[in-house]
Picture: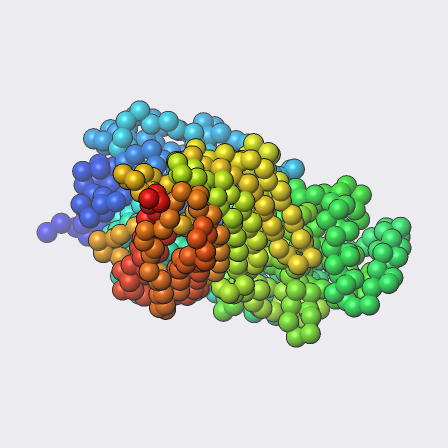
Length: 635
């Protein structure tokens, strides 16, 4: 019978060889289960992340990652990069590349990684740097093995976990573990784990296997709201030398107020006097705030400055005033400082800024958000100020920070509140036109467009384009009009009432098509929906319309004396839970027709089973927007 020591040695060798065999299998693309390859640009063969928390201000993160990439769209999924700074150091960094047969073709040490500043295209400077692998593949598929160990002397941001990392990427094996050797409590929140069979070994240790890729679908919620994910935070943490407390949003906000914002708001005496003089005759806080906001807009410009405590501490207000620039934190803080001087209360606010609506998680206090704006309490409600945009109207935040939960920093701590919701009926595009048709089917028209609500911002951007780009915009906007020429245009921006007006004169050749002695004319000349959302064989994601809108159209169509109406389209009226559509064309005299249209798309969330009906509604809009009337030559 073998001795116990020999048995131990035998099993140790056996386990070692099994481990080597398993890793070798992960290097060969042919060993990937078929279902994981379906609609996948890459497969995460293995991603094991271990976060060892040594103290409230010290953690070490190790990552062992193996990724098979099938095409150029999957190259960015390799994830071969690490950021570092004065408080974050890279201990180990290595990558190896394997071909389709599992043969090693390239090895990279830390010195082979590109090392550069993490400044982006809109940043002035940053104290962060990044090391990344710039590998150009010779053939696909290839597999990359990536190993790193990073030492953090700051713990404000514990790594989150997305078992499925993004669209068109499958996961064969992924593991996430926190080892807490500190006296600080770790908070963890998991979301959307239910349908993915994710194993839970403890509150801080999870494993996922064989998760198929997710394909994006039109009118679906943002990825981060439905994908499985885990977020973690410490109740006592360190943000680059500043100790923080994070039991709830109240004390997290109190920490921000006391440690990051207080002491940054002193202004030069001359500026104090100037803003007080400017607002001397204002009779309300809102009137004062508007004067101060426009003063700030005229004096500063936005530029990212990612320095300070984790990029979270704003520049001094006096420095912003002296330099004339700042990032979102600095300009928000500067505006707050100016308002303080004229006695108008306001709150520094942390938020997620993006066209997709993303909330600060009210149930999980942590260092969340990517943007700062300013909040003004106003008779039980709030007015929101975007301080990085030097042209936006006072109180206007549509399409970037609207309709989401945000964290306001009050003297009593943090508080979650919801930003302005731009309602369907207020997001208006009014299009009016007078259209003259000749006997050859050519048109000349004067078009007036007025945009309000969330549609204001979409059209107001035109004001800052070049003359050439403005003309290109209209040609793309009305791309179904053959040989469109822009004769003249004028743009008017009413910032007080938040209305943008476009007056455009155009002509188009052969707009109406000849059919024998008839002209076939499409009366919806200037606001046509030409495409419906795509068809899916099996819809997988819910339906979300995050911003509704309403379009009103009214066109006078003048016919030449040689043409008369042969047949008109019947009135159309559609109303359902997704919206409304109305279409009518009437003859108001011998030579004039009146076209009217209304298209309302409602904001809302619907189950995936509703997508077929949702798309059917759009298809009807496309159909009727393209409908034609018959005109015939007078005998």
